[in-house]
Structure formats: C-alpha cells, structure tokens
Image (cartoon, rainbow, N blue to C red; front, side):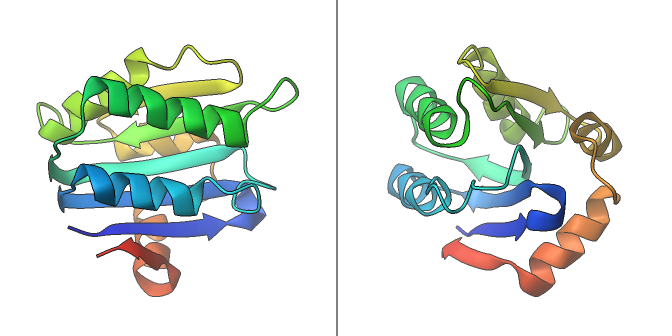
Length: 146
C-alpha cells in the first residue's frame, strides 16, 4: 500500500503518511528516499500519519533500525528532531506508534505517539491544522512507494 511524503521547508517539517498493509521492503525503500541528507537539510520536525496504517511484517528490530537511521541522518549533537506519530486510538497504527516511541532513546530524536491530530500539530509547533497538511500532501506530495 502507498507511502506518501511531503516536505514543508517553510516549517522545517517532513510529513509522511502510511496506508493499508505496508511491507518491510516498502518501508525500507521509503526510508531510503526520505532519510537523505538533502531531505533533512532544513527539517527538524516529522509528522507521520498512521491513521490508515493497517498491517506490516516489520519486526521490532526493523523498527529499531528505522529510528536509528532517522536519528543518524537527521539528528546530531546540535540538532533535535521531533517526530509526532498520529494514529487512531486502539488501532494497529497506534500500536506501531507506541513501538516507535519506545525506541526513541537516541540522541537528537524525540518521539511522541498521539491520537489527537491537534495534539500532534501543537507538540511539533506547526502553523496549520492537521487537515491542511493532509490537503497539501494530497495536492503536492510525492508517492514514495505504491
């Protein structure tokens, strides 16, 4: 299923949406596209929409590796990356968000798993409401993996 990405440079933010069943190879391909130095050159925030994320074969070790890669590429001693993972309460996406949150102990990376889209936007300190970013993603985002 699709993974979409939108860079919002004016807010220093990367927005990613996962939908449906996303395989391990799809996740890794998307991660490779998003975690380039150029993708994070001006970003210090990441908003991840997991509200329609339904399944994956990724293991805990895979997720740990993904967070390590994000921290390695995007963070550093002088840069903190804030990652808000938004999912419906009691959903598969929220369970995955909690696993990501549990592995957030890397230097330069703060992760927050939330069920309220307004809370995600406020925690990241963004200028618009969540749906404005969804609209912009639908209009201007790129499909990382189909």
